[in-house]
Structure formats: structure tokens, C-alpha cells
Image (cartoon, rainbow, N blue to C red; front, side, top):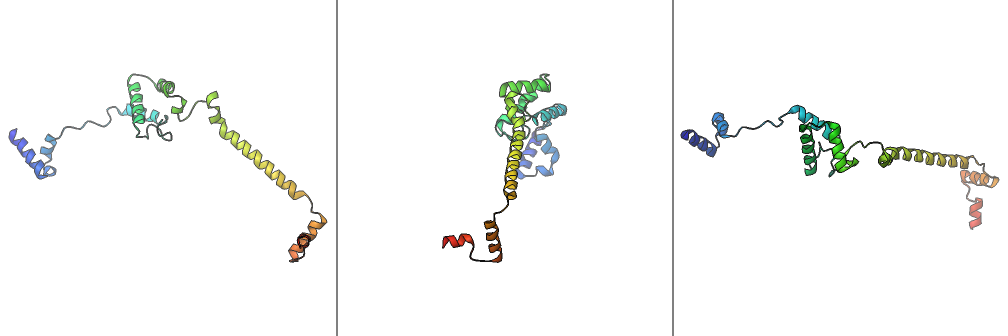
Length: 169
């Protein structure tokens, strides 16, 4: 055993551990699997995509690397391990952080503007555009007076003495 340790130490010092995998494997601690329960991790990841990172605000807690997002993912994992279902976990997080933690907030009076705001803006924009087009059509529909016809004819013919220019002189 002592000779084996000495050999491993010499190999490490000389940088030869790549050539002696058996000795290097004995010296290194065994790595744990990254995911202990893949079904649990899948459930955590699925729910994490539905929850907003409170620090980043434009990422889900599954995408964010902020410490709070990591903490929220761990809370979700602990809640699943404790036997709670997705609805109970979401209710817990909403009670703690408010509706803002949800990417898809519920339809209620406090979130009415979020849901109906874009529709109201679209209707208001369409109404404004309709009024502008109606005014433009009304202005274009008024016939020109004889003086305006004469001025337009003079401008088209290239005449320099239009009624407006004569008044300025």
C-alpha cells in the first residue's frame, strides 16, 4: 500500500497520471452523479420554466444563474421532495412573492391591465388611424376654388407670376 502511494505521488509530480489510469483512479475520489432523481429534476425544470426570476425579470428561474433563482429552484425541489404538487408549490411562491413570480399571471382585477392593455392600445390606435384617414379624405374631397385652380395651372406651366407671388412683390 505504501509503495502504491509513493508511486501515485511520483506519477502526479511527473505529470504522468494520464499514462497510468489505474493509479490515478485509485487516488481520485469517486464523482457523484449530477442528477440523483431524473424524474424529480424534470419536474423541477418544467415548473422552473413557468416561474420568473425576480432579479433578472426577463428570464425564468430555470434560465437564470442569479443566487435568488438558484434558491427558488432549490425551494421547488424541496417542495417536490416533501410531497407537494405543482399547484401547491405555485400557490406557496405566489403567497410569498406575489403574482409577479408567474410568467403567465392569472386573470383578475389586479392584472386586468396586463391582459387587456395591449387590446385597448390596439383599439385606440386603430381609432386614431381611422380619424386621421377620415380627415385626410374630407380634406381631399373639397373642390378647389377658381383662384386655386389658376394658381395650380400657373405652377404646372412654370409661370413665375402666380397670384401669391404678385402679392409679395
